[in-house]
Length: 327
Length: 188
Image (tube, rainbow over all chains, first blue to last red; front, side, top):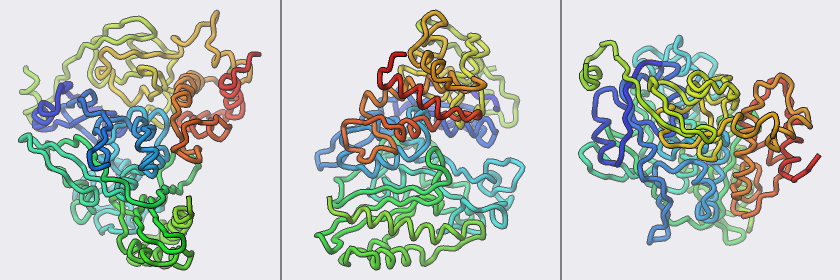
């Protein structure tokens, strides 16, 4: 690990001021950053510890929504009574990710900002445009079984690894950000992560020095919420494909639907096309299959990950069938 | 050389300044003067000579380094010691002693919940934290309805909740049996 200096921020304004130094980075749970620093993929020269900022509360909002502090632990959010009863898809997604130990340490903001687990990103001997812009992408033409099928580019086919962010995308979450000039703004989660394009190093719309202070969940949409994750082992593995679905029916007909995929793109992948193909249609397997076909209409396999296209369709159908059940 | 001068100088050798930290480890306040790069795991093993906590992968994948931080299980390899000012750490050495074993330590012996023993301190610290999480009603991926307040600690629940602890000897059936014994209050 490269040397760095360390300071602990006492409040949010001090934190954004402190991180304005060249080479500075925030650290909170550390579960992803320290992993990458040990491999010298991340090389900050100064760490600003924001783990003790008073941003851990989960608060009810007047409109019936919920505000989750950026420094809340993943495990505290997953176990929160309001989250479990009104946003069960978020609780399900959180506990589908990582391990008990990691969830106790990892923060909500850190989960959003975690970096890809593309093996070529982690292998410093391999070419990677994300690590070393212009170097090329060893995953294209390489072992790309776990890679993206939607929204990828010729520069990068990495996926975003979060489960939590997929559920938040289905819930239309807003991300609260504090900037270096102490200006606050909100970004819809759908606009927060970027597709790789020709700058895969830039993963979110955060500007240098900006800090996530919280996540706003709007009032829960009607319908049953389900998160389903498919992976290579039963627990403690990243998703090959995951689906967050929220489906409301009047018994036979779907009245509203939300669909987001994980493990398929450089960002959580909301499919408004699938939602349109579900709304107003009978809650049958034929409808689910039609939605799956439009969701994957533009999917592109790279060889090793071709199977993900069919897997994503089947996972969506199974998840929708579960979510459309009464009760 | 001041810290700010150092970090503003591109390509310069960065002189890492040691940082002081005080934390309670197994009930005793410990003062440490550490390179900020020191993980909590290395602080415990190399500076406090508490070698019960094991280094396996050093990347949060195996769980051998699991300790309790303010009562919660974490991977001590993926956190910096300097971040733990005022925190309470409990390691395997703090759970019990050869004369007075923690119930989980006794159960692991009784059920032969190990072969080489390298993962065992992490397994036991993790199980202590896990049982507290169940007590608090936290759901897991094996819980059918995350909204239900009561958790029934089935074998599937224990396996899922302990998935962050790898055992290369594959003593899993006996680890499961040991944890079940303690969860169900079995006295042997």
